[in-house]
Image (tube, rainbow, N blue to C red):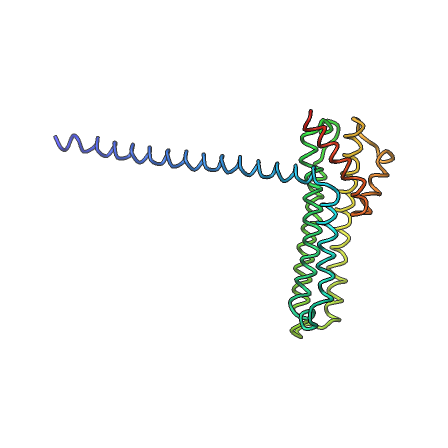
Length: 237
């Protein structure tokens, strides 16, 4: 009798293991789905925050705070300037400005674009590629700057070597950075004008908006109120 029950016991054991594994997989999958929902909610809140943000707050984040960090370098001891403080200050200035700028740009060029009727008139695929280029170049530039500044301060790298490295790497990166940034401004200007008119705008239609964005952050005082209005219209609709 025990020999007959043995296969059944083994089969029951495997069924129990299968049930436990299925339960664990369902729990893990449910956890990821909940996390995905929370992440999407947070991202939607962030994009909405940037689209609702007043010009004064955006100006504060992009210009005033970096200016305050720059000004602080005049009030620190000289050994700090040539030590760790200066690389930190420059990195903080660049990161603050660029991260806020491109989060704002992504909120407009991707989040608003997908929710607005203008998405049926033209694609934002090129924008989603180009918007990452300035951010990646910024990270590379900061790494290059911090490494170079710290190496010079330890006397392991001459200023001449640093200058030649800048000519070889920093200038080409800057050119790539400007191409990506100009296209992002171009797309943002086109999107704003197209959303306002309801038709796909040509360059001559949004030249004014493009020039305002080129003079960022001054131009944001004229651009951001229009984005606020477009976002309110979208939420009402």
